[in-house]
Length: 261
Image 1 (cartoon, rainbow, N blue to C red):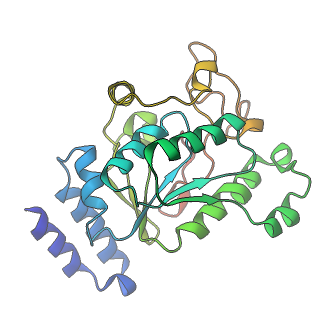
Image 2: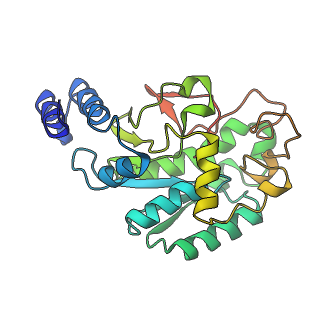
């Protein structure tokens, strides 16, 4: 089925987006995957940013170890794309500097810094030690809920998730249903070599902490260097079963797998 016919079928399966039922929404997402199945990451991202069947999108970025790839692609395709940067106010200073450097270098024209409100912080973490008592509660306060609020005005969001990042992502598609929003994963099929080659070919700056043994970078209190031979995410919440901050969900449930946003 050609892309236009596939998407038309998805529209017929549901009602208007404002009142679209669950089956219609699932059909629309399935049609998008069928339409873009053999497209490249660049083509998927370019089409998604202009396709009315996807809707209004924002890129969510941690400005972490691999984030520059997707940020660069967006800057080339449409510099006006909203970029949501979640500042937990516990990030490494190197991450904040990297965010400023990349935003200027790539010419990102709609960067939005997402933070928990002062009211929320005062009520739930007045002394800044919540992460010592409950990392889940801290991530929820400083990352998950602020992001959910920021995404409320969008039809979906773009992530840097990839199939190679874990068993639960082995069948990751370009488009996913996330509640009543669409999650777009342009790099789903990329390998670690693809990521590194893209950085080299486009002369993109690396996060300064990567050279210091941090292949996966989160908040300073909960991220440690990784030793040779360890899993790249071994330094995230070391000593805990926790491997996910909580911003990725499938069927309304938190996915506890490794993630680079």
